[in-house]
Image (cartoon, rainbow, N blue to C red; front, top):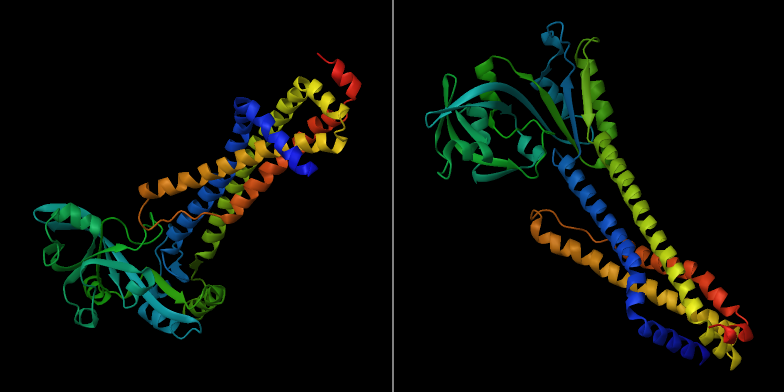
Length: 398
């Protein structure tokens, strides 16, 4: 019964000073909203960055020859189709592909543009997870017959043909004329992390081999069955190439692991920095609560004296001011959390369709607990001062 009366008195006191209570809770609102927003932004950015990196290829291990700029590369050092076929036998490898590229100029509709011609083997679409927007991808006949067919990026199709359909159009590169059978794009933009650029043209590797007269691969891609198998596959691919080529040949065997770890570490560091800033905002708001409550104690000294004179115990006075501090901080926390949740929901409409804003339930709980704890911690000193006042001295206070 005493606690219920104390709670009622605390609410009445806050109602009597609505503006002061609202302004006092403003810092808590900002701090708790900041915690939710910071964690949400961190999770979203982390998800976005990792999706960009992973879009290069799932569980991918890729190999390139380490070139020596001051001397020509021996042909025995180059990656070949035989290396690619040998990589299929590595335990844990589920798919392999190879590419070679050549800078050329394309002539279409009387316009000339520089492009990257990429010869691809079977399995390339699976590893790179390419999406065919219009038309079709290469079939087995295209790969074997060396037909003069190609796929172009969606951005190149727009630049060359505008709104006109590009499928079936003729494309001249050098002495060869190709028929466009499809338009493709990467499932997620990789911003230069893959060998596909905005203006790339894919052709069957057999046709590229016939045109260049060599079966040399610039990049050898191998896809592991799972992320756990990637380190082992990486080591075995390196060992395979060392066994098939001269000892002085060097190969750069890369995976997404290092890039993913770096991205996760950067995201974590930024999250920690922003959360610290949010906690500083809560600290400042807690100091504001303490100052306002101290002023409140001074203003209500006579009221406290009357309550103690008619029998209110020290505990009830202490609880009253702690409840006021809790209501200010708790109410501010709830309002701040609602704002912190509303902003990502509203922002979702302006984000790409494949990007979803994750809401962390833990951030909501942490924001509420920390905000309320801040209010109680900084509210204790004023509450203790109020409960320690002597009734006679309080009644004399004017």
